[in-house]
Amino acid sequence: MTTNSTVTMDTIVSLCKRRGFIFQSSEIYGGLGSTWDYGPLGVELKNNVKRAWWKAVVQKREDMVGIDAAILMHPQVWVASGHVAGFSDPLAECKSCNHRFRADHIEGNRCPDCGGELTEPKMFNLMAKTFLGPVEEEAAVVYLRPETAQGIFVNFENIQTTTRKKLPFGVAQVGKAFRNEITPGNFVFRTREFEQMEIEYFVKPGTDEEWHKRWLQDRFNWYPSLGMRAENLRLRQHGSDELAHYAKDCYDVEYLFPMGWSELEGIANRGDFDLRQHAQFSGKELNYFDDEANERYIPYVIEPSAGADRSTLAFLIDAYREEDVQSGGGQTEKRVVLKLHKDLAPIKAAVLPLSRNPQLVPTAKEVHSLLRENTDWMTQYDDAQSIGRRYRRQDEIGTLYCVTIDFDTINDRAVTIRDRDSMEQERVPIDELVAALKQKLG
Ligand code: GAP
Image (tube, rainbow, N blue to C red; front, side, top):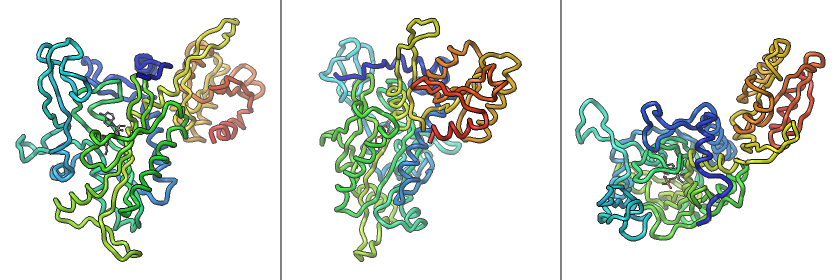
């Protein structure tokens, strides 16, 4: 099996915990299996991923709009969408150790953990259920959405009439989804609560295959546009036995994770399955009047569906580097650096006084507030430990620029900007600092 040998998942998990990217959920109670909390740096990184996605697929295009639908939906939505009947995985249990497995992920009928015999696979529905209202009865059952997509389909008419968009047009949404996965794992790669970044792109039937190709290209190119190395990405077409119940065709964008090639994003041709089903189950007309062709039809849908957590994890893994550098004393030492793209790095600039000397602190604080007030970047002020250690700490979290205030600053009102990647240093007057950094950050 091919794996990303540059970094192990354990190294990433440990960096994430140590530096405040991702913590185990409810850790003080011993944790809750496969659920994770994004810490102060993690929330910035994931927000930057979602913002970059929104910018690329909504803001920069004239054929896209966004929505934010509720997680809880009418239970009939999931009957119409086919999820009640068909959103299941085959589950097999070991008769000796009782461990459970996805039967389609293992070969033969022996337990991968203890070698015991496995039960016949049973279909297990992945939707998480809850009750709304004070009585726990069957009539009060609702599902936590297993995909955000249905919030777009059921609003098709609302969106089309309020925006007066003509085909082809698409709707984007970012939001939580829940699946009772049989085998979650690999950190935030497969969890039971996660965030999706989904697009439903409505097209005239017959133009769907062409649009599918265009979206495959667009979405595949998005990852390298944010610094991900092209050699760690590939497109893979689904075999007919893999296709979801709604899909006519589907490709995955795969990333070479430490555990091997795995799905980052699915790009499916859903045909007219969803709008047709919702029209039938709701009794409402969900179609489109094409005034050029003077005909009414149900649009087809191309669906690029990405995971915000998986993308964040892949960007972290891809950015991780261990480099040999010369220390002040002439020895070689290791520096860990997250070479995150400038749009993704959680902290754009850190302000570092050379020491806590009272002569330096007022100017350092002044520089920090200058950056906070004149930019919309996340910044940090760091004065603990030696300057070398602070550079290493900022490198490890991917901070793009360190701004150092030293004793010369008091006389010449100039600071040093250190570049994360080249480690080159440049002296800039405080009055020109914001403009100089803005130019670098584009
Ligand atoms: N609406 C289509 C759909 O939901 P999917 O391939 O099941 O398609 C889309 O999911 C994306 O959502 C995946 O490519 C992945 O990035 C993310 N995803 C799915 N299940 C996940 C899970 N259990 N944990 C984290 N991310 C998940």
